[in-house]
Amino acid sequence: MAKAKYHAADGSVKAETELPESHFGQPVNQAVMWTAVEVMRANMRQGTHKTKTRAEVSGGGKKPWKQKGTGRARQGSNTAPNWARGGKAHGPVPRKYTLAINAKVKKKALISALSSKAELGQVHVFEALGINVPKTRDLAAILSKAELIGNKNLILVTEPEKNLMLAARNIRDLQVERVADVSTYALLNANRLILTDAALKALVEIRKAA
Image 1 (cartoon, rainbow, N blue to C red):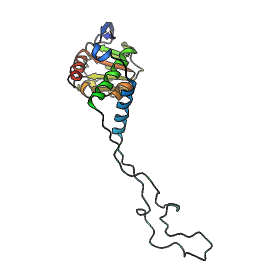
Image 2 (cartoon, one colour; image 1 turned 90 degrees about the vertical axis):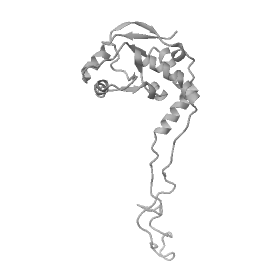
Image 3 (tube, rainbow, N blue to C red; image 1 turned 60 degrees about the horizontal axis):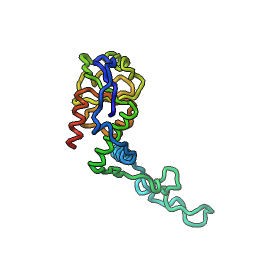
Image 4 (cartoon, rainbow, N blue to C red; image 1 turned 120 degrees about the vertical axis):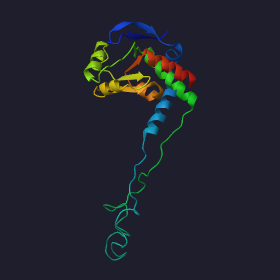
């Protein structure tokens, strides 16, 4: 049975809690996780790269010098790629890098990532993360007491709380995401996964229905 440290709202460790076997105790499939990450990274690319061809750069229209008799190599236009400020030969053009992934594979990759985190002891469950005022020092104090400062942390919440979002944005290597939006890429990119009781319940319910 997969287990995680269970913290009080102030960050102190209370005990250990058992994690749902269906999401945190499954075999880790490296292949599907790699596929999910590749799809995520590809879909993050804008594909707006572009260089001008010889037809698009300014210049041309007149032959630089006559074909014969100059002793120099023949040239047809100063927009050719071999000229300074000429067009780029075979340069990049705008394109889509979008890839698709099967829903079952996507879910299996996510559960593999969750199981991997649990296996490495990188999952922490809080009874609550109630930040009453949007103060970074309050959240930093909670994470420090939980010995999570200095790690790349991912906090999962059911719905974004304004005070938590404002408190978290000034802490280095800390990301806050909704349970419904979390990806395999975000999980693997973090060193520690932090969930509240409510977020853990929502994670199990949402991914069970997916």
